[in-house]
Length: 445
Image (cartoon, rainbow, N blue to C red; front, side):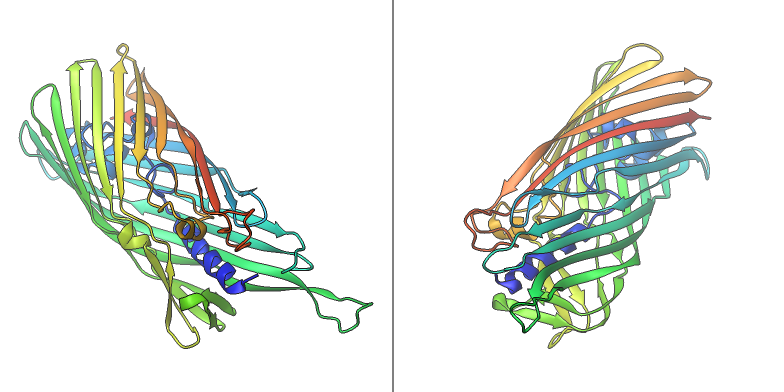
């Protein structure tokens, strides 16, 4: 077995897994369809139709200028199902349930037509936990195992200000302040006989790879600017731009490391401090909201997400032999996303909604990219959502949403599985499907 190739794919996959953030999973790479249960129920199509502080502060802060003072709290259970074949059969992740909290608010400030609001949201304990057992084979007579683990906590605060310029135009801006904590590990362990006596074997585990399991904090900042233009009582246009979110480096204290080098070589790293940046991409969204009748809302949105600039490669700085930095290729492409949502006011206290989201795949469909991203399959392309809001009286309202993202699988060529290179019976593969269930409580002051 070519250990260099094994570790090369393994390290790149581990780095991809470490890229989980507060907008983790769902259709848009590792970005949620939306924040808050109104946005989820609308399939994420809210840039032209924000309806609460969460959907406005995160998707289009201009919408805050059109809202009465209110607050909202959302709690969501996110349930992704992931599988991969790193070699010697398909395995699943042992971490499949996460919580996604969020809170938002809006209130008057600084004079007529100007409001202050924002949102705070985050997730905890995201990541994957794969254990790939390797049966004894000619390359590994005593067998072994591969371990792939990642965990990250991401929290973001988006203080926002918005202004209603006139009866047609509203503008707004958010300062995106985030903190992320991450740790990850990708190691290959083989059992080896170190006894010189044939009749008295002494089997010990010998491992190597990338092990940056000590949690590290990093802090980032960016901005969102948005606008809403009401053409008439039937049509509203929306647009937002989110700048890249630049983070301080994550730093890890680690022991000996092994990373892939050029032309199939290995790069050894000694004990010491390793670091790398996991930034968040810039993106643009345009949308249109139409009300054919007063009770019925239709919203359509398109997004462009610049993943290529943040996850094409990941650079790890540290005490490597012969170099200060190792570049790990992930090969992510930019992504196009389309969101569709509709809402109908059944009566004065009940609203029902549904949505659909489609996103192009940021992971190229080739064997090298699939193998490099096996433990972070950002593959979802189609999702449907459903939701409802009940106005309970005295300013209180309750919103629920459900999302189902249809499972998608990418499979490489025979022999591409990273822990069994060349075995025609083993192809690198990644599968991802998702469900989420959420509830949100709102109060209008």
